[in-house]
Image 1: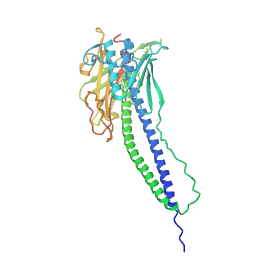
Image 2 (image 1 turned 120 degrees about the horizontal axis):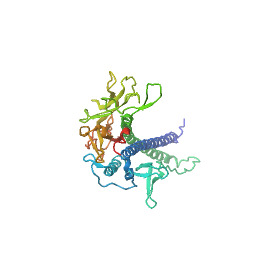
Image 3 (image 1 turned 90 degrees about the vertical axis):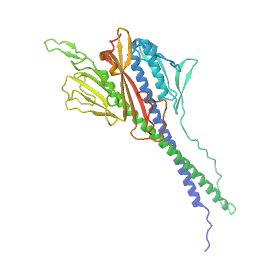
Image 4 (image 1 turned 30 degrees about the vertical axis):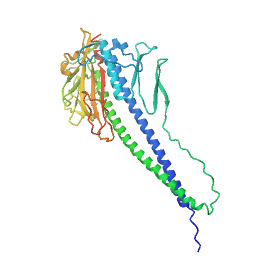
Length: 418
């Protein structure tokens, strides 16, 4: 029986399979990188929206001097009076707010910058534009025309794969049979090397993905807490229209506060002691911070504080048998400051609760939350520019941490200091 010589077709098939596997892993890696870039974009946009929203509230608080908040690209603030240490005029408050904006941009956005301009078509309307350096979007400044930076191009990540055309094999002769095996072995080695490299890169990308997912969860928790606080603060001390019980239909405006039920109160202290109470009429909105509507009291008084499980919790103090329920998890610190006005001196100063002389003169509150991820992400690198609510250095235990400061102007106090 005569044995047929092995022509190497099995090795050739294995090589083709390895090449297809290598291309498949490269495609998977490319898709993973695209998803990671999109997630980072969403996170940066969320940060930018928060910064713009905070500045808008500061401008609302200092509306008579809103023109002082105008800012061009690249224009930085050098120094300003500390309005948390001394009483500031409206002009000094605007300079301090712009300094706070600059520090926030530098610490929370890569190459962060902002422009604040008055809209020419609509009177008393302002535009706040936030820009930053991103992997998929780049911004440029037209210094000659003075126009704001606009996205120049979307620089999408891509793999460029080049392949050379192979000559067609018309047949194998005896002189070529000994050359097939080394070619296949070299091809297999290259394919295995590509697979190993792609696997290593995917592992690194997976760790980055976990870090981005943890950061996204931190921002989501902060958004829930701040949105709840903002909604209740906007209603604090608000009046409502009520009808008289007589034959003629007339409407009266209610008082701003119920007797003995302050619309705004706070306690200054450690993380577990710091608290904020916001009250509004039950007839204005029966829903409390937990979503309950069962209170029969004339007013709703929502109290916010941290619990021992690092959760921001709240309850309606006027609701019978109400208990504190968690709003957001991972909250390590909760600090508050109050912008107290001095109408006679026409000054404002940011104070803690124990420093405030009259809560009825408070025009705005500043909420600070230090939020950490629930799970550790060991490949996170600490950012030395990030500080806590009390300007403390953030711990480096592998968790993702962010500090969120938001100013909320109290709508019913806008006429306290013209």
